[in-house]
Every structure is written in structure tokens, then in C-alpha cells.
Length: 41
Image (tube, rainbow, N blue to C red; front, side, top):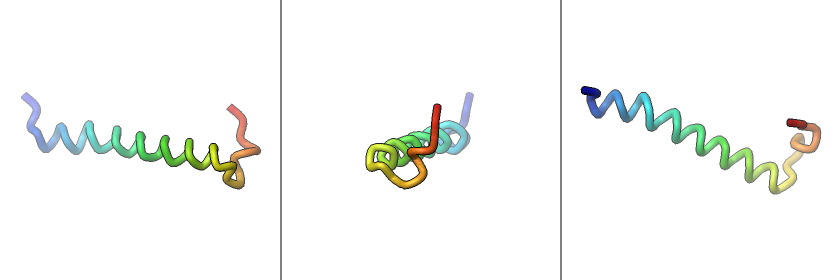
């Protein structure tokens, strides 16, 4: 059985960071931040 401390640091933290980074990049792209116009998928 997984201990709660391992589960929190090994699962929740990377997912939370990914969500925060994704929201920040999405907001920057919507606000036409410099540097985003040159980016292509």
C-alpha cells in the first residue's frame, strides 16, 4: 500500500505544477505576450 507522503509528493505535486504551467502559458498566449507569435505547433 502506498504511503500518503509518497503519494502526495510523487503524484500530486508534478500534476499541480503541470496545471499551473499550462494555465500560465495559456494566459500568456491569450494576452499576446511577446514571443508567442513566433511559436508554431
